[in-house]
Amino acid sequence: MNKKARFEQLQARVFAGSWLETQQACDQLLRFGGGFSTTIQRRSRRFLLGLLAHDNAHIRNAAALAFRKNRAHWAVAALLRALLHPANLRHRGTLAYALERLDCRRHLSGLFTVLFSAAGTNWEVQMHILTVLDTQRFTSSPEQRRAIRQQWESLKPDWNRLNKIDETSASKTALNAALVQSFVDALAGAE
Image (cartoon, rainbow, N blue to C red; front, side):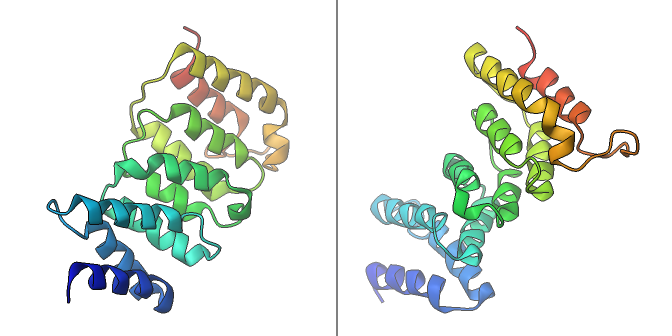
């Protein structure tokens, strides 16, 4: 079987198989072509990035997990866009989870935008984004840090209410405004 036929077969397996088969096909597509065929690699990457916009959450998740497993750092921006897509509102946890193993150093403002957009809607996304913010180093411009602080200042008064956190009974591990403030201060604090 030639490469083109194999590529088309793997693409078809993404949509025709079980969850496990979909995951395996995405993983194989990510590595397809090796270091020798850059044209087929580009096609595979475009195809997999396109899956992040698919209607089926299982297909999106399989692509995201392939990016995570293979440390496909080039997929960070597309994952952040998918996390902010309104159609994915209820199915974003795996997309955020995938970011934990990817190099997000140039995406500080995008990570905070996702964190803030998850207020009141997705605790799992908040946890994964905070894990990324806690475990990686970032580069950002003063303008980006200023924008993060401005976003936070407008959201901060409502954060606990949106996340249904009662200040009087919040545990030490609650994702309350004080915790988020500590991340904003550490990563986007005043110049």
